[in-house]
Length: 232
Image 1 (tube, rainbow, N blue to C red):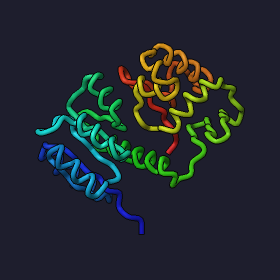
Image 2 (image 1 turned 90 degrees about the vertical axis):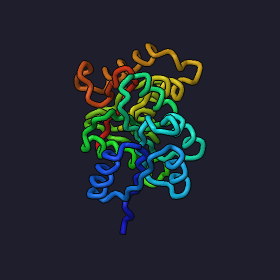
Image 3 (image 1 turned 30 degrees about the horizontal axis):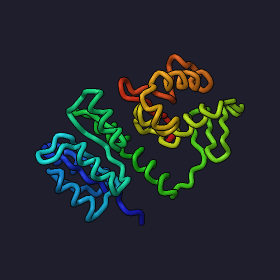
């Protein structure tokens, strides 16, 4: 029998905790909760969950500090659930190691979708899925063979274009910040060259998207970065 995915919710709002405990429980998740940052860190260390849902406005620690401390020892997926709407807050949380970011009030269906993405990505990192390719509509990206096909026809990409696409595809479904992408694909010295990244994203869209002006796969997260939308 497959064990139920375990979710740790770190939030000091009683109504949010009650709602998530009920809704996620009905969806066959095992839910534990914490109302303070230190308590959440202790629970994560004592019994590591599969996903952490984290509020940034905690009474004892800022949520970004919680992310930093978690990332010192674990890569458990972290989904931020916060009232903070500024792009700067989103970018900071994501750059510090969060996997995704939703603002309150939120759609429970969207949260469930983000949890599924986080679980799939975590499984890929652990190697349990053994995925060497990613499919998005008519696009098939073979990460092992360094090849890309669209509608069965090979797409010619430069080495840099492929590195960028491979990074986006390997993190399919996750919000990736401009700085995070630039650092991973080009190196830390290029972390501030956002326009450089935009040029390469435009090139990828021209080669891959049915309509580059209305992208379906390489999506823009305004003020934050990009998200690659792959098939489930």
